[in-house]
Image (spheres, helix red, strand yellow):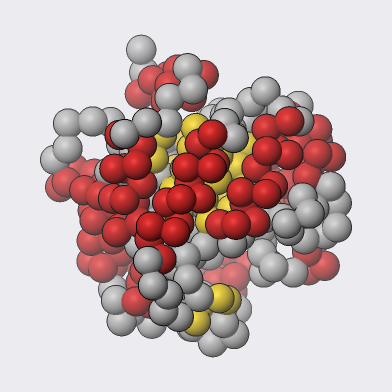
Length: 301
């Protein structure tokens, strides 16, 4: 049985799989520049060792899946910093860093590398999605760079419209790799485009994704929305929410302090697991301490 077959089997058997936490915000927390538009991709140029260390720390914290630092390595975003011709090079570097971290962590369990692929424009601005023809061409290029670099599967993250989600799924599936997809929604269960999550699920199920998730939301909002996701699909589901703080216009994230933030987050993860989530982890603002705490929670289930 292949490595990816083991992942699929575990998902289908409803085993809990732990994902990593935030990368861009963790780079920022460690003092690495993450100014927009490149955000986390900037670290591939300025501090690749820190990127690898973050992957390594998440693995040691208990993550079974680490996502490559490719959330912003598409050609469109890189072109805004006059680096448009570096997309394949930087994507390959990001994947190599993840693979090196897996080797150097020396853990006995299998670690899966998900190739992070996001909306082509700002994931909080659905109105910026390009036309379908343009989006398909650009997502095909991005998916190919991830597949060529050697990821285990493609992880489509933080999609805010049905239209771009379908285009990205088409592009990713053309690589022959398995694909998971995650949406960002509001607490009413609507995508940021205003489309219903139930309609999004119906639209993407035809592509037979590994799993359907929701992410980049406040944990309490995920706790409200995840049962709605469970009600409309039999596919594996999952969630990874925000830690304390909020998106910012300069560095990408504004941190804030909150007492017992990790334990409060884990309380919500417990709700997600009861709602049927088999993939759990963290998004912006979370760090290895969150993942270690979730690992402890899951081990007690």
